[in-house]
Amino acid sequence: MNKLSAKHFILFVFGVTYISFKTYPSLFIVEGGRDTWLYTLIIYLIFFAFAMYLIYIMDSRKVYNINEVFTQGLSKPLGNIFLFLFSLGLFLAALESAAVETNVIKSCFFLGTPSWYIIIFFLLPSVFLIGKNISSFLIFVIILISSLGVNTFILSAITEKYKDVKYIMPVFAGNIGSEFLSTLLLVLGSLSAFVISLPYLRYLNSGKDLKKHSFISLGILGAVCIYILIGILSTFGPVRAANLFYPEFTQSQRVQLCGFLEFGDFFFLYQTVAGFFLKYAIATYGVYIIYKKHIKNYKYFTTVYTLAIFIFGTFLSRNNYILFSILKYYQYINLILFVAVPLIAFTAFALRSKKK
Image (tube, rainbow, N blue to C red; front, side):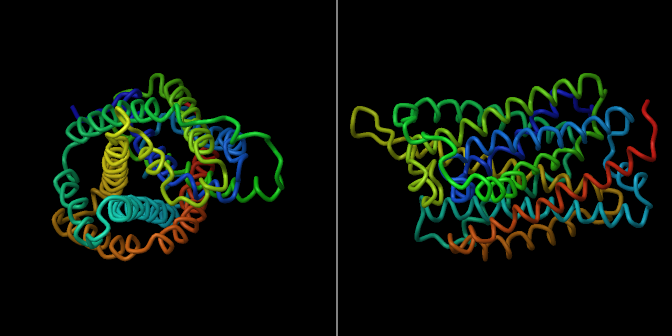
């Protein structure tokens, strides 16, 4: 059956939200310094309210199709424009996934390998996923999320002894006002990737317990994000952590077995490859879901979409400094496409429709 349960929806939330936060936390630490984890705790409460607000509107109106939310809340022409902007955000999320994964593999593992060669191996498997029925896609998501959960637990456990809480003390010692504001914009932009999972709600077999499971999953996600930041800061301190492109890679390299066998970077590699491939697939499939009725030629859509990702992704992944400069502005773009656009559309829909 082409249906999802509310518990399945949790997997999509994790699949699109945590991997970027885990891979390049230095982007946020540059702004927040030692107190980034505390600022993120406060920011997460804002994000939590935003995410639950969107879920509440869909669940209270019993409308889980995001196309209907946009076009019924706004006029049909304006709703389609907002839906296009939202889909553009999905495309950019897919592009971010391809570019960052390619850059990680190139800069951390295969320095001499050209970006275009790496990104081909990233994109080709996705071609076979897009267009499959939701049941097949769900199996893929379950397998990858399960393996990523085990991988994350192992990586956290084997790097625990290298952490020292003295690096995150004292708290609120910097310029709280400016640090918090700049951190707020970046962290909220990153966390807003949550909305990538919303197109999949149309496949819910029942809205029963959706709010409860969303509440629990977002709570767990928040704890994971705070733990990630504390782990990086307590390993390197704020100055060193802010100057590493991928601090968890350096952290994983410290792991040794019997004093000579290094193996921690394997877990980082798997996390990056599987995590960003999952986010790419969910974002791309989301675009396909939204415009499925308008896509007359699936092969043409896949070819054009994949080629666009290949061209832009190859360019962005070639240089770490260029990529990270663009990633910073990408979080600001997310504030528009993934926060402002859904917030306006959902609020308009809530005002025009009645609770059921």
